[in-house]
Amino acid sequence: MKSFFLCSLKDLKKQKTMTKWAGPFKDELTVIFKDGAITVFSSICPHFGGEFNIDLKNLKASCCWHGYEFDLSSGKCLSFSNCSPLRFYPFLINHGDIEVFFP
Amino acid sequence: MKILKREFKRRIDVHASVVWWNYWDIEHFTTVHKAYTNVKMLFENENMYIVALTWRLPIFSFFKSSGICTTIKTGKYKLEDYQSTFFNIAVKTEIEIEEIGEMSSLIISRYQFFLHGWRRILAPFMYKMMAVWNQKVWDEDLPLKIRRQRVKEFGFKDFKGLPDKLEDRESIKKWEQSLPVPRPKNSPINEYL
Ligand code: FES
Ligand SMILES: [Fe+2]
Image: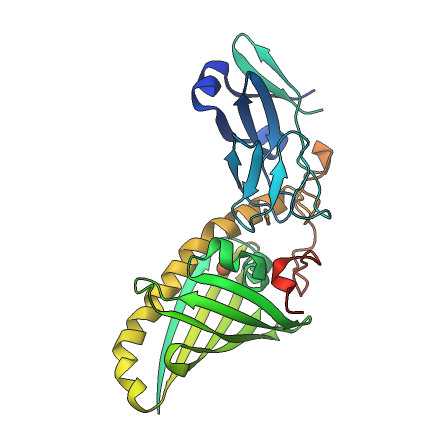
């Protein structure tokens, strides 16, 4: 199983959200930290490939390209039903580092 | 009548179909371009579209204008668009995308402003505004084209996203963009259809 170092837990706690291209996964990953919970997901918008603005308070991602919104708990597209949901990635915290796995 | 003409050429390292997509993707007009405040589709098929548009001038954003814009495909990667802008000035825009090698394109934009009567005094202003407009739109669209190229190289499919398996995340085979660019049926842009 391929793994990828995304960021340190310390940095994530400080910044709350981080985005990084994951070369070995051929994907862009975003990690969010809210109320002690961590979520890692692909932040390439399933519509046309856009990038997201993250609304941590309401746990929503809204795309900068066409404004579609996604629910960050379920991954579901809230704007249109024919758009695929966001993909979540499994991860481990390894010696204070967030290590993401390609399932 | 005075016909004011201006041409711009720009090069970008993305496939011509990605540049083409950007011109025909109506949904990004109001979210990516600050100048457009409203867009509604009136008619579209695989060769053309007609939209009702509202936009503002860059810098002089108090100049707001509404009108109809008709865009017609005139070649594989060629289009012409016709609209009337503020003071009822008719504008024709031609866009031509030349494929340079595998993944590089040259974009030629030609603008023509038809200045009737007193409107000819606006020529020097219009001449400058064309450059400002072209630069602004270019800057706003650039990150979209670069990112879209990148995700297509990972096998991205519209409305689906990246392939599930890592070994399938390979560049798409067909660098094409069919028209019209698909849009959800209940998109607010379809309100007048
Ligand atoms: S690419 Fe995200 S909403 Fe269109
Ligand atoms: Fe654009």
